[in-house]
Amino acid sequence: MSTQPFVFPKSNAGLNIPALTACFANTTLSYKYLWFWALLEIIEEQNNLHAHLCVPQERVFAKMVTKAWAPRRFYKLSFGFNDGLSKIFEFLERTKVIEETETRKEESFIFERICHWQEKEPRESKKLLNEILGRYVPYKFLSPWIGAQKDSRSAVSKISFDESFGTPYFFNQNYDIVLRLEWMEYFHRNHGLLIDFVKWNFCEFLQSRNPSVPAIVNKLAIPNERDSLVNQKKYWAEYIKSESVLMDMFGQPITEKIFDLDHFIPWSFVAHNQIWNLIPMNHTLNIKKSNHIPSVDSYVEIYAEWHFGALEFLAEKKDRTFTNIQEEYASIGIALDTNLQDIEDVLRRQLKPLEITALNSGFKSWTNG
Image 1 (tube, rainbow, N blue to C red):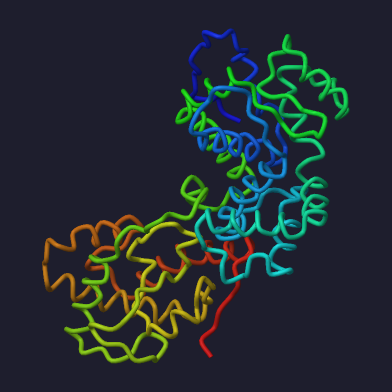
Image 2 (cartoon, helix red, strand yellow):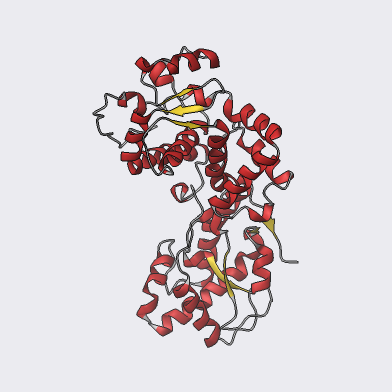
């Protein structure tokens, strides 16, 4: 892992800040990142910080699963072979706690569903979450403060209670965590920096396990709003109008005013709206396609023909409104005067590796039929 670009402020309360900077050392699973991220969110939700805060571990686990949901289920990033979160996700979807169609819902929705499950099935939920998330991470997280040799749950619990070790939290007799006031004040005061610290480290962890996947940094959460497609849609609408196009590349009806813009390789994989990955599509067909992957080998020829036609239109129009469109084509080696065969070759080279990586990541293939 590269050198961390973070320097934490010193503590007037004598807190062990070097231990905090080492909290992700020797991390092989996702749990520590999610654990600390969850704790920071729980602290930030408090209106007043005036005493130690007791937090049931089950609440922290619910936050952890929520934070992991978007990168794992929506963006389909791998957390590593031994990561047990997939077992939790599969159980939640199999038992309809969260429907497969609800994968792209906002964090608050996912969190509420998990909390409802915990309330409805306390024994079942506690067993599953404790087995995967509770066995090690609440205790291992404290290793920089108490020493890595203290492995047993009871030993760590006993030591964490000793204030001389200065841990951010200790465990009560029910194994709930009790956040110490002085640490909560520090976490609250430096919340933005610490969240960036968690995200940076988590992104490095994810990148190491998804080396061919683009835009990892944009895949930690589902955005409330995606970037606008207004200019891209205007570009394709003017082309459709100029050529009196009546059908999309799959033979389904469209008009200049009624069509969707589809990401050939899903947005949830590429996380961008580059023009070379966009194509007009019938609305109903686009819904059916969802975030599945068309075969590049099957469709690249006609896909290239559409982009070639649109580029010819753009060359004749000479409209500065679409300068950014030209730049996006140019970023992959396509100019206004590039011939059809070369466009097809460029698009194949650009799309085929993305198709393979996306399918290997768990995205499903799609055919029109």
